[in-house]
Length: 169
Image (cartoon, rainbow, N blue to C red; front, side):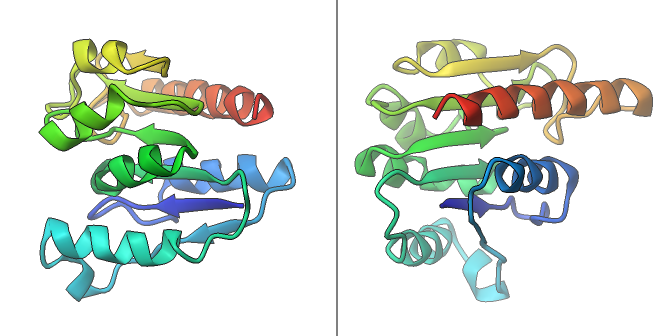
Protein backbone atom coordinates (compact mmCIF):
# COMPACT_ATOMS: atom_id res chain seq x y z
CA UNK A 1 0.00 0.00 0.00
CA UNK A 2 1.12 3.54 -0.75
CA UNK A 3 -0.15 6.79 0.73
CA UNK A 4 -0.05 10.00 -1.32
CA UNK A 5 0.18 13.20 0.72
CA UNK A 6 -0.35 16.39 -1.29
CA UNK A 7 1.03 19.88 -0.97
CA UNK A 8 -0.98 22.86 0.22
CA UNK A 9 -2.17 23.77 -3.28
CA UNK A 10 -1.01 20.62 -5.04
CA UNK A 11 -3.68 17.92 -4.98
CA UNK A 12 -3.24 14.25 -5.91
CA UNK A 13 -4.59 15.16 -9.37
CA UNK A 14 -1.64 17.43 -10.16
CA UNK A 15 1.02 15.92 -12.45
CA UNK A 16 3.69 14.78 -9.98
CA UNK A 17 1.26 12.94 -7.72
CA UNK A 18 -0.96 11.80 -10.59
CA UNK A 19 2.00 10.06 -12.23
CA UNK A 20 3.30 8.76 -8.90
CA UNK A 21 -0.10 7.09 -8.47
CA UNK A 22 0.07 5.67 -12.01
CA UNK A 23 3.57 4.27 -11.41
CA UNK A 24 2.33 2.59 -8.24
CA UNK A 25 -0.86 1.19 -9.76
CA UNK A 26 1.00 -0.25 -12.76
CA UNK A 27 3.31 -2.05 -10.35
CA UNK A 28 0.42 -3.53 -8.37
CA UNK A 29 0.30 -1.21 -5.36
CA UNK A 30 -2.93 -0.04 -3.77
CA UNK A 31 -2.99 3.72 -3.26
CA UNK A 32 -4.62 5.82 -0.54
CA UNK A 33 -4.81 9.54 -1.31
CA UNK A 34 -4.99 12.29 1.28
CA UNK A 35 -7.22 15.20 0.31
CA UNK A 36 -7.11 18.26 2.55
CA UNK A 37 -10.13 19.72 4.28
CA UNK A 38 -9.90 23.44 5.16
CA UNK A 39 -9.42 22.62 8.85
CA UNK A 40 -6.47 20.35 7.97
CA UNK A 41 -4.59 23.40 6.70
CA UNK A 42 -5.19 25.59 9.76
CA UNK A 43 -1.65 24.92 11.05
CA UNK A 44 1.33 22.63 10.63
CA UNK A 45 0.13 20.72 13.68
CA UNK A 46 -3.27 20.19 12.02
CA UNK A 47 -1.56 18.87 8.88
CA UNK A 48 0.50 16.45 10.96
CA UNK A 49 -2.57 15.28 12.93
CA UNK A 50 -4.48 14.61 9.69
CA UNK A 51 -1.61 12.70 8.12
CA UNK A 52 -0.90 10.74 11.28
CA UNK A 53 -4.57 9.68 11.41
CA UNK A 54 -4.26 8.32 7.85
CA UNK A 55 -0.90 6.64 8.51
CA UNK A 56 -2.34 4.96 11.62
CA UNK A 57 -4.83 3.10 9.39
CA UNK A 58 -2.08 1.49 7.29
CA UNK A 59 -1.84 -2.24 7.95
CA UNK A 60 0.63 -3.11 5.18
CA UNK A 61 3.94 -4.14 6.78
CA UNK A 62 5.98 -2.41 4.06
CA UNK A 63 4.09 0.67 2.89
CA UNK A 64 5.40 3.55 0.83
CA UNK A 65 4.62 7.21 1.41
CA UNK A 66 4.78 9.77 -1.41
CA UNK A 67 4.64 13.34 -0.15
CA UNK A 68 4.72 16.69 -1.91
CA UNK A 69 5.90 19.89 -0.19
CA UNK A 70 3.56 20.45 2.77
CA UNK A 71 3.07 16.70 2.86
CA UNK A 72 6.72 16.35 3.80
CA UNK A 73 5.80 17.53 7.30
CA UNK A 74 5.02 13.82 7.74
CA UNK A 75 8.67 12.94 7.11
CA UNK A 76 9.58 12.55 10.82
CA UNK A 77 6.57 10.24 11.35
CA UNK A 78 7.51 8.13 8.33
CA UNK A 79 11.18 7.91 9.37
CA UNK A 80 10.14 6.95 12.91
CA UNK A 81 7.96 4.13 11.49
CA UNK A 82 10.81 2.94 9.25
CA UNK A 83 8.76 3.24 6.06
CA UNK A 84 10.07 3.90 2.58
CA UNK A 85 9.19 7.22 0.99
CA UNK A 86 9.40 9.49 -2.01
CA UNK A 87 9.52 13.17 -1.05
CA UNK A 88 8.79 15.60 -3.88
CA UNK A 89 10.02 19.13 -3.08
CA UNK A 90 10.38 18.44 0.64
CA UNK A 91 10.64 21.43 2.97
CA UNK A 92 14.37 21.12 3.58
CA UNK A 93 14.45 24.37 5.54
CA UNK A 94 12.46 22.83 8.42
CA UNK A 95 14.71 21.86 11.36
CA UNK A 96 12.55 18.84 12.32
CA UNK A 97 12.73 17.46 8.78
CA UNK A 98 16.47 18.05 8.60
CA UNK A 99 16.96 16.18 11.90
CA UNK A 100 14.73 13.30 10.75
CA UNK A 101 16.63 12.93 7.49
CA UNK A 102 19.76 12.10 9.47
CA UNK A 103 17.96 9.01 10.83
CA UNK A 104 16.51 7.55 7.61
CA UNK A 105 16.80 3.76 7.67
CA UNK A 106 14.42 2.80 4.85
CA UNK A 107 14.68 3.45 1.14
CA UNK A 108 14.02 7.12 0.51
CA UNK A 109 14.00 9.27 -2.62
CA UNK A 110 14.29 13.05 -2.38
CA UNK A 111 13.38 15.08 -5.47
CA UNK A 112 13.92 18.83 -5.70
CA UNK A 113 15.03 21.65 -7.90
CA UNK A 114 17.79 24.20 -7.58
CA UNK A 115 15.35 27.10 -8.17
CA UNK A 116 13.17 26.02 -5.21
CA UNK A 117 13.64 28.13 -2.09
CA UNK A 118 12.68 25.14 0.07
CA UNK A 119 15.31 22.84 -1.45
CA UNK A 120 18.78 22.60 0.11
CA UNK A 121 21.28 20.51 -1.83
CA UNK A 122 23.54 20.02 1.17
CA UNK A 123 20.69 18.84 3.40
CA UNK A 124 19.45 16.46 0.69
CA UNK A 125 22.88 14.97 0.12
CA UNK A 126 23.42 14.71 3.87
CA UNK A 127 20.31 12.57 4.34
CA UNK A 128 21.22 9.17 5.70
CA UNK A 129 21.38 6.92 2.64
CA UNK A 130 18.66 8.70 0.67
CA UNK A 131 18.66 8.69 -3.11
CA UNK A 132 18.59 12.27 -4.44
CA UNK A 133 17.30 13.57 -7.76
CA UNK A 134 18.25 17.23 -8.02
CA UNK A 135 16.93 19.06 -11.07
CA UNK A 136 18.88 22.13 -12.19
CA UNK A 137 16.65 25.18 -12.62
CA UNK A 138 13.48 23.47 -11.39
CA UNK A 139 11.18 25.46 -9.13
CA UNK A 140 8.93 24.29 -6.28
CA UNK A 141 6.52 22.74 -8.80
CA UNK A 142 9.50 20.92 -10.34
CA UNK A 143 9.02 22.94 -13.49
CA UNK A 144 11.21 25.32 -15.47
CA UNK A 145 9.47 28.67 -15.38
CA UNK A 146 8.52 29.87 -18.86
CA UNK A 147 9.58 26.66 -20.58
CA UNK A 148 6.79 24.06 -20.77
CA UNK A 149 8.76 21.65 -22.96
CA UNK A 150 11.66 21.60 -20.52
CA UNK A 151 9.15 21.09 -17.70
CA UNK A 152 7.66 18.06 -19.48
CA UNK A 153 11.17 16.63 -19.90
CA UNK A 154 11.74 17.05 -16.16
CA UNK A 155 8.44 15.30 -15.45
CA UNK A 156 9.55 12.43 -17.67
CA UNK A 157 12.83 12.16 -15.72
CA UNK A 158 11.00 12.26 -12.38
CA UNK A 159 8.52 9.55 -13.45
CA UNK A 160 11.37 7.35 -14.72
CA UNK A 161 13.24 7.79 -11.44
CA UNK A 162 10.12 7.04 -9.38
CA UNK A 163 9.50 3.94 -11.50
CA UNK A 164 12.99 2.58 -10.85
CA UNK A 165 12.73 3.46 -7.17
CA UNK A 166 9.39 1.66 -6.73
CA UNK A 167 10.70 -1.35 -8.67
CA UNK A 168 13.59 -1.56 -6.19
CA UNK A 169 11.28 -1.91 -3.16
